[in-house]
Length: 119
Image 1: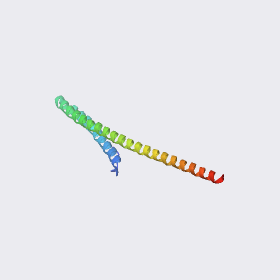
Image 2 (image 1 turned 90 degrees about the horizontal axis):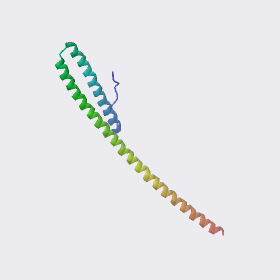
Image 3 (image 1 turned 60 degrees about the horizontal axis):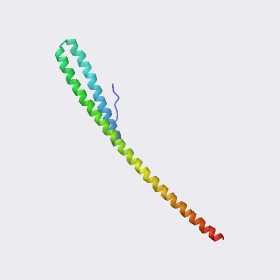
Image 4 (image 1 turned 30 degrees about the vertical axis):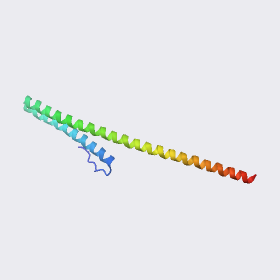
């Protein structure tokens, strides 16, 4: 029996939750397919079993495609967020380096002034 997960509160968590639910639906389709195949094989109607298998295979294939596309979408979103974070950190680091360079220059100027006063 699958575990019940709580509804998430943010977009990234929502994406992962939706992906989890899609995986659950795919597993349920696979389980139902095998249950029906076993039930129909007991009856012995091979044509009906074949049609049913084909229908379930198509449904599973569609769900798997949706699941794959959704997983790829989440990966792209994560890549975009990662790139944005990297750009932000890079900008912050360059600003910090500029501030540090300015502080060093100010310190050197202050030291030179102090040296002149002492002479």
